[in-house]
Amino acid sequence: MVTKARLRGLIDAASGRKRADLCITNAKVLDVYNKEWFESDVLISDGLICGFSPKGTALASTVVDGGGRYLVPGFIDGHVHIESSHATPEEFSNLVVPCGTTTVVADPHEICNVCGLDGLYYMLDASKDTALQAFFVVPSCVPATTFEHSGATILADDLSDPLKHERVLGLGEMMDYPGVIAASDLVIDKLLEAKRIGKIIDGHSPAVSGSDLDAYSASGIHTDHECETAEELRERVRRGMYVMLREGSACNNVLALLGGVSERNSRRCIFCTDDRQPISILSEGHINNNVRLAVQAGLDPIEALCMATINSCDCYRLTDRGAIAPGLRADFCLVNDLDSFSMHQVYVAGTLVAQDGAMLKPAVSRPDARVSGKMDVKHFSSDRLALHLESGHVRVIDIVPGGVVTEAGEADVTVKDGLWVHDKRMDIIKLAVVERHKGTGNVALALLRGYGLQGGAMATSVAHDSHNIIVAGDNDADMEKAVNHLISTGGGMVIVQKGEILASFDQPVAGLISYERGASIAEHLKALHAIAQEKLKVSKTIDPFMTLCFMSLPVIPAYKLTDMGLFDVRSFSFVPLELNR
Image (cartoon, rainbow, N blue to C red; front, top):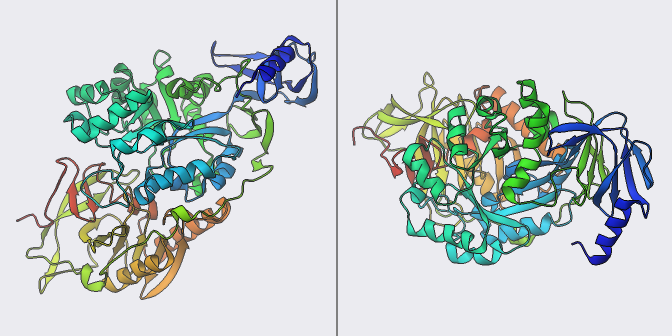
């Protein structure tokens, strides 16, 4: 908050009537407004940038020599699910701030699908004092569809209070695009509530085009992070939307979309990660990785840096940051070079918080009872995993490497005594989703091709977006053991072979998040991935658990499995497993 005394002090420091707190000298400063570099001392006072001074002339209590590096605004992630890092908000801050990310716009629909609005308030409280400035949107689709059971339901009447929170910027990604296009009452009521309070609305419109896209954007939806092609990017920009170039751990769209970015439309393009795990963050970076990839592919560094900073501020009406300019928050980075985009120093509100890839004072995670003990499974046993078939001609979920889209496949499988039998000659295994929120006893079954698994089972309670338990395997005994392990531990990930637990990773926060440090989480995930690929022969062309957890997401084509059955996203309806029915 800028008080009268603070504003007077800022003006006095800017005019030279008082000494500034900090001066950054000997650095190339990015001007995102004129899109150019310039050389100047940059003055900071009371956490705000107060002005510029000729090199070597500034009056400041502390002077930092930039060493000829590049001084740029702190990076902004325009759309991220913190829960997908499996880290608490505190530990997520420790992971991404050293990469130069100082602000995120987070959609907590993962934890809200388990815990309802308690999940949002946990995320707000846990991130309140972190170096990372975390803003949020209220999830719009809890559950994502009416074709699954989640831990909560958020309706239009529930949105008013959270939308008024000072760190809540709007309504989260509207995944129910068929509901928007059809002008569904439930969807319209949510859109109107966000409009009434004057908040933005995030989008999610994979493969939507033409008049359907007109209807979607006409509703007031402001962004989209689901573009796959340059033409889709241009179509959305033409309709006044902001397009996010995403580089997550499973979904990688930066390079595919760059062909649609031009000097004329780049101001409507921003960067995001969506879902990014610690392994990726620690090895490749965060938003600085998006910038690096774009520049390596030929995008002008200044354009890429604007997409990582000021463009996101324009999109989300964050008027106090995003540039090196007087009166703005002193969130900035000293970047070593314009090739690696590695960070020498990261400052938040004028305070040095990270140096050479490490936090100077890491945040500490705090347990919270609101998001613990979220496992209510009823009537589960191996009998519930028996796949009854009258015919062997079936629908199959076909994995597409490199993303979360699947294809609608079909196959002829082995049936014995009315039950599906695994055939080692075919890369087809059983997939099951076990409801874990309401004690419904639901267990739905399908068949999955292209996963590669042999001789065991893998299960996780991270299963987008309702986060029921999802398990894949080639035998019921190992699948049962895997599910029961997650029930007993409160959730996480597990690999089972011949009745033995080969590896597991407990995630007691809503079955989604661990209290461990980022490096430890990364080691767990590396071990799980290695065992999945080496012991269970999961295909090396996919991320074993990231791929598995998206097989239950009924808003991304084509076939997905919810706790209620096999779902065809193209028709937005359930379909029988057997093709002759």
